[in-house]
Image 1: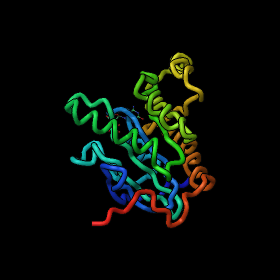
Image 2 (image 1 turned 60 degrees about the horizontal axis):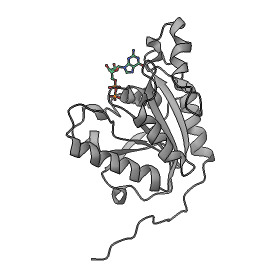
Image 3 (image 1 turned 90 degrees about the vertical axis):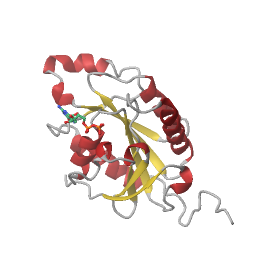
Image 4 (image 1 turned 180 degrees about the horizontal axis):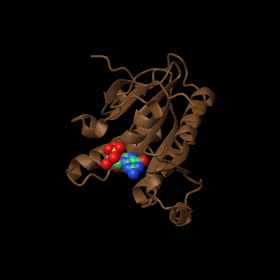
Length: 206
Ligand code: GDP
């Protein structure tokens, strides 16, 4: 399957700064080092496109990538960074909750979880926030190339508490990448569009 053509559009630190468009959004979240940048690059094929982990300023924002006329991919800030001060971490968490619970365009959330680690409370909380308003949640278990064949079922067992089985993915071996890309494209085609010309937030008069 052809790679998704995606192009960086803008960053936002608040809901008000999010683009006003009628694209359906698929958001991607995961703790730092889970392999989010590598996965985004594998999905979109644009090397360095989503190298958000290394770009100062972009690690703490919502980053919007346009993928065609109807779809956008939103790279959510990584969480669990040891070096981020607690106050900042709390602000980022609040912004993510705002986005997940109120952003009209959001159709699906992909939660990345390290295959060997399994989901922890942050991941299940994000998923619950999205599901609470009917947003589809997809779990992707990253770096599955690191699992030996004999370790796969034990790794999958860590995900059993979730409502859906994860897609095993690897940016290195490309396992699961096509499937994940297909799911994203299908959501872009099938999700209910936000109203054209919809102004989700009040425009403040000065
Ligand atoms: P991010 O912090 O979530 O954006 O993670 P990165 O994509 O920067 O990856 C973190 C580390 O994991 C890097 O050293 C990557 O080379 C490694 N990594 C990412 N994806 C994979 C994968 O699919 N397989 C393996 N074995 N390593 C990976």
